[in-house]
Length: 188
Image 1 (tube, rainbow, N blue to C red):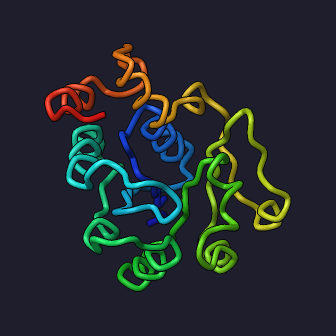
Image 2 (image 1 turned 60 degrees about the vertical axis):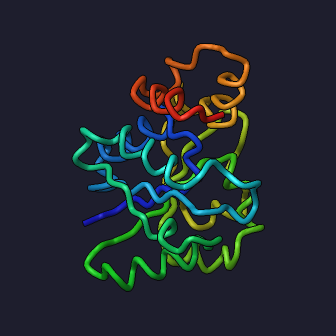
């Protein structure tokens, strides 16, 4: 099976994540998408507690048969690196072919990642476009699969957290069930 590994903080998970995952499956690039929330991103400040981010993903993908939650990084309970996660999953599931899903905004910082060139050799990239960010030239030589831009490209977890803090409506940006969980647990 072809598996798309979709890493991130998912703080919170939103329609941009979900639409992109469905687009990859619909285009038959991958058979499944595995959301892999990090315990702690080494390049970002501390996210919302892992248990909340995990629960929000579970709520968002509850009815999705081809989108799964993979807890590899959460189970480490420490900062982990994408290259290590990919090697671990390839060893654990040698029968699968792995792809790595990444947003073009994040891609421009990939040279700050641990062993990023090795990562680019280990898996094929699927790039989620952002209308304001181009794929760096050094990445293009790895022939990444670039998805078509959609409205979901402009949705970000940062924007959602900001809107929630400002008491603005976010229901067009994430599933209502996820928003209910956020309210119930007084997140953001």
